[in-house]
Each structure stands twice: as structure tokens, then as C-alpha cells.
Length: 279
Ligand code: SAM
Image 1 (cartoon, rainbow, N blue to C red):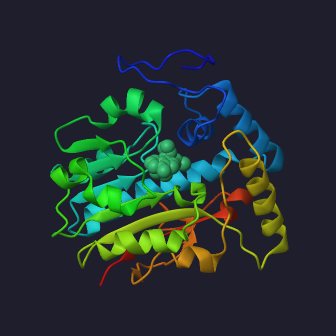
Image 2: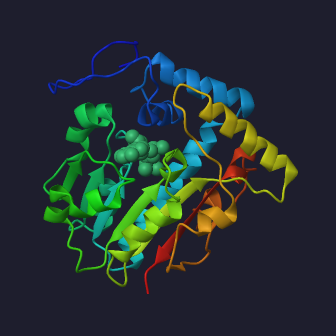
């Protein structure tokens, strides 16, 4: 699907508005994927003008997701994952990472993007332990009552709830911390929450300026969202949780694969993540 207007590779009839960029397709463009249109690539090019290494923002986020799933699947007893805002299938999706370590792991993906629905769903629903629901992840009640979610996630047992790279795209009226509180209240003790978010360091003029430039490019693009929030605002998205060591840090610093022998790009200072555990 590299040409504007070409149909998704699926028999599912779906209306795709190619005049509007979609979060899932723009993210795919950042990651070097092929499931995007010209309008999506324009957003990527625009952000690159503000930050030439912009693609690393997406890679830091994706690699954080992969490492946190590996951690949960290998170092905890968690075997059910509710992945809110799955994105288009790419290398190493949540179920692949989790099921490689624990073949019994169950994953439910939720995403409301029509291309993810039409084109990615079949790839994400690869086996009987992975399922997909097209719902709004910023409406916790809807997700918590969703029939697909409830058929495959047992809320009486600890689970992992993922909001990775999603809440900076929330443009509604509610405080994102309140949205997370509603989710967290429904989780049993021993559950984990994985969350990453665009970050404005505030106490650093240089990286704040970088964050502001990217924020401006995202917000005034055909995609229309991409908010860089402060540490305090992001911490408020983990209400009642204990943060797993090393806490809320740059995504690239969350248990990296080894010592760093290369310099990280500047944009790495503008995305953070943490894993919280419900006591
Ligand atoms: N979580 C994946 C990752 O970190 O690699 C994908 C992140 S991607 C930046 C954000 C995803 O959230 C997109 O696929 C988008 O379609 C989805 N999304 C955004 N708003 C949503 C909403 N209100 N309901 C469901 N999905 C949403």
C-alpha cells in the first residue's frame, strides 16, 4: 500500500480517508514500513524538519515495548496481555515476543484504525491465543466491557495492560491520568501497566525546544496529535502503582540490551516510559 488511494490487502470492505493521516500509518512510516500513504509520509517529513533523527523516536518506543514484554513474560507470572493501540503489524509484535518465552501467553490487541482492522488484524490474530478488538482505547469502560477482551482476558488474574505510544495522541477533554485510573482500578493486584509517552524535559532548555518543535509539527500536521508532556503529567498516568526499577526513564534507558557503545540521538531525550505494578 505505498500508492495513495490503493486499497488495503484485505477482503474486508473499508473506507480509508487518504486525505487524512492516520496515527497507525504515520507510525509505520516512522518505522520504515510500507503500510502508509503520501499524506502519512508528509507528517514524517515534517517532523524530520524539526528533528532529523525523528525515526529514532519511534524506534526507541518500539524497542521499549519489546523489552518490557520480554521482561514480563520471563521475569513475572503474567501470561495475559491487553495491548491498547497495537498499531500495524511490524517485526516482533507483542504476541510473538510473549509467546516465544511463554507459549501459553494470551494477547488481546485493541486498535480503532481502519487499516489495522482491515489489513493488520489477520496478521495479529495469528493463533488461537491472540485476538483483536476494534474499540476506542481512551474509553476504559468500553474496553473493560468489550466482549472480545472479556472472552480472553480474565480480570480476576493479574494481567499486563499496555498503553505504549498511545496517550500522547489523546486529544479529548479528560485528564489522561483519569483515563489510566479507570483502567487501573479494574486491574487485580499483581497486574502491570506498561506506558510510554512523548516527553518535554522542561528543566532542559535545549531538549524542551526540541520537544516543542516536534509537538508543533505533529499537532499542526494532517495527523493532528502528538503531545509532549512533562514528567509530572506522565507520572500521574500511573496512579496507585509502584514503578518497577529503574522507574520512569528515557525509553532507551529502560533495561537496555547492554552497555551503550554508541551515542544515542537527541530525540531519545524526548520519549520516556515505565512499567508500574499494582500492589
Ligand atoms: N503500541 C504500538 C507501539 O508502541 O509500537 C503502536 C503505537 S502507535 C504510535 C499508536 C496506535 O494507537 C495506533 O495504531 C493508533 O491507531 C492507535 N490508537 C490511537 N488512538 C486510538 C483510539 N482512540 N482507540 C484505539 N486505538 C487508537
